[in-house]
Image (cartoon, rainbow, N blue to C red; front, side):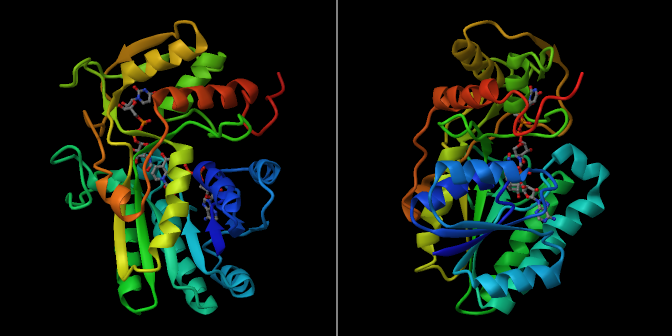
Length: 341
Ligand code: NAD
Ligand code: WQD
């Protein structure tokens, strides 16, 4: 298939490109590089031989985006481009609605202009908000508790209404749990700007000495060791879920949502211990109060994706940590050069 990939230079997009090209698909990336570097696409090219081109373009530039789409005539779109920081979304609410919601409207108009009716969307487990039951399946109520989550829930609604408007359209909403890890080669991985908000990139920077100590946000949760439990999913497993989802368009009517997780819960302490095993030494950490907005536990029921997409997570926690460490230790400054001292 010819696939238009928005945000393809980002963390999940770049890993998905390698899997897509490896399966013989052709990809055109549209990315503003606001949170990524074209160097990530060079690494994708290094790891795969398939057809890959890119255009530097903001998805909110509807005229340009439509021109790009009309010229490429994609069979399907995978829509990763977006802003993703929960903390920042409160302070920059207008930007989050503009990029994540208005940007998606702009993309749908470009798809209409080019005659493409198939889209896979990067949604998030955050649309569920505080879990009512665990593991959460796709029928769980939608009730985001932060601005970022609201923009994802709105985009899901928008895509659902858009897909229902014409029989030839289809939207697949992939609700990612906690994507972590890196490509097995150690050549691609997550490259956050500034101080990482998420556990794994922060922990990796503690291990390289770039950060002093991991701050564990709370050890008084009602969990076996008191720290928060999440459903971490290897980024390569997540990438493959997108390739598997492309086949779902053959029978899809309207929109459908899928949880993409392993179904296994791992605590912060367990993740810290796994990291310590891989690096072979203790890592400095401190206990701090709970982070506002955090829940004790999130865990996916991935049965629907297993059944209907024919997809299943294959990698375990050790694979997640080993691949992350291979990437981080070989590229301590990500895709960029170290800062001048
Ligand atoms: P990322 O920031 O690494 O990738 C996003 C990409 O989109 C970047 O390359 C960025 O430059 C690009 N982009 C941002 N705004 C743009 C715009 N206006 N026009 C064009 N390109 C733009 O993030 P990621 O972790 O790869 O996440 C990809 C998608 O998955 C996002 O939509 C995110 O909300 C969603 N998601 C991520 C996670 C996670 O934990 N990483 C979890 C659930 C959902
Ligand atoms: C995981 C656990 C923290 C950092 C977020 C978004 C979600 C999705 C994935 C985009 C929690 C603890 C963390 C640290 C810690 N993103 N922690 N010290 O909050 O589950 O999910 O990222 O869609 O929408 O909400 O991920 O990695 O930030 O936290 O103790 O320095 O690690 O309290 O228990 P989270 P996370």
